[in-house]
Length: 234
View 1 (tube, rainbow, N blue to C red):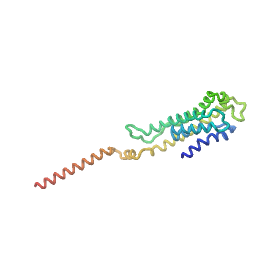
View 2: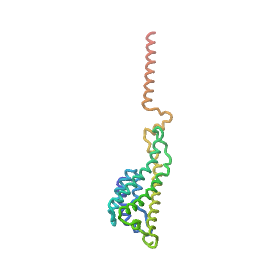
View 3: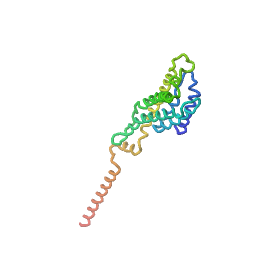
């Protein structure tokens, strides 16, 4: 995904959330939090933190938002940073082998999936906590009430449905990130390191190989000089 696509995704998520998802009779995910989680999985903790800041500020000023400006930005920047750091540890552990040698490609494990699921829960929950803590709305209003068309449902059903949607799509994004990391494994090895692995048993350092070659040349010159000196004496 290009940088332009990442920026459009971060800025477009709040608009799609307000215009489409919030009007759905079946409920829907928190696209703002999901955008930050997906970007953190794709680009790492720095991009996740920046995406949380930008996407959160866009959500704070998108109508009908009337809360404290910067509240969502703070929550999502922390979420993006944590998701990116947690998901990135599995990739670093695969790349660095013992004594600095890279390891062969293999499964990256379930850490990206777990990180995506935790981020999908952490984003909406922290937003509700921040809303209540800053006095922008009481708990029932912060949870949003039941979804449209289900006015008789419990007051927490809308938040539960949104959380279920968000976690499901977050896990799907984590699985895609895991598959992408496993597929790109061999190509991330440096060319010099890949050459050393292909060379098999000949893994001497370049400096050592040069010393061996220089020593062989010096020995050959010395023997040739001795032979020529002996021939002249005879």
